Image (cartoon, rainbow, N blue to C red):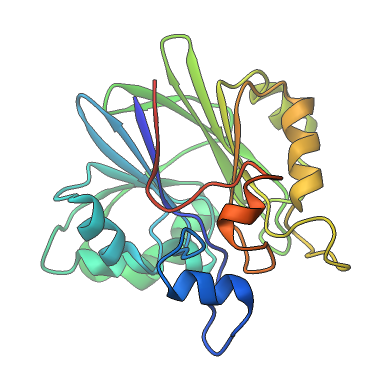
Length: 248
């Protein structure tokens, strides 16, 4: 199993249009602060699955040489997590798409022209794609009623992707995500910027969550430009970056 963080930015990405902060300048100069919107690639010997389809999906797929996707799992219906699916136009149609019913109802109205093949999934019930076991679990990302995270298993290896969430993850979900080998966690801002972003975790909350579920390794994603430039911030926080890979 191979996991690639295709996009590690929050909704506007970094650099932000019109912003001249140090982090956005670093991003424009080609540093690892340059973050496209959230998407994760999961690969096995049998194929490739996308967790969410970033608005930057075309750029992400070209940069990694991705020619074909076997399936997509959507965590929720916010635009920075699904609108890139339209980039499959004239490239690939009839893609197998997975998600909870509310999310699929919302997104498929937008992308119906691509005739995706719908698969409704139920939190806590495993399903198999490309020889890997996937399980979705409910998180808390108001006002979205049914936002989810994703668990991926291969043998005794376990990866947990938190999806967009605050730290009020339901107890039944916490039981499912215990003891991951890798925890890819929403940490939109550092904890020392003087404000809090509702419906997301900050860096301190993300690390507390990682400790709570006994994660062996943690990497932060869905990152805003409020972090210092990547090479400075990574000395303090386990920040992911676009193109970062994990092999199991």
